[in-house]
Image (cartoon, rainbow, N blue to C red):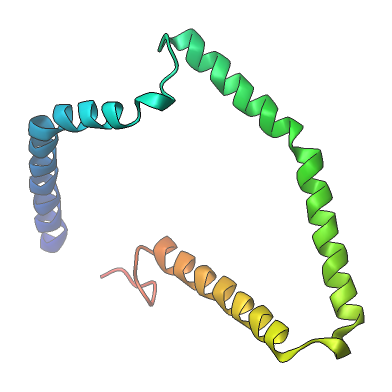
Length: 125
């Protein structure tokens, strides 16, 4: 029980340090960030403009669904074609497919570790 209390105190101290750092440097960072990215700022920067842009983004993405589904089915057809002609596959193609599968598995493992709080066994001391 004492270890939880000491961890809480350490967490509070780190939070105070972080808030002090943000208090000192946050304003300058904010101004620098806006200056570097001013080409992306819509004028006038109002709530109405933000609402309009979010609607444009939503409906633009909605309109792009048919094109993305068409691309997806083309890729599925390509994989089907490869599977039918798997005897003609080169070693390089099989190697690329194996590396892709290994990469997907590695990202899955990383996600599991992150989901458990960066522990390897799932045990929380």
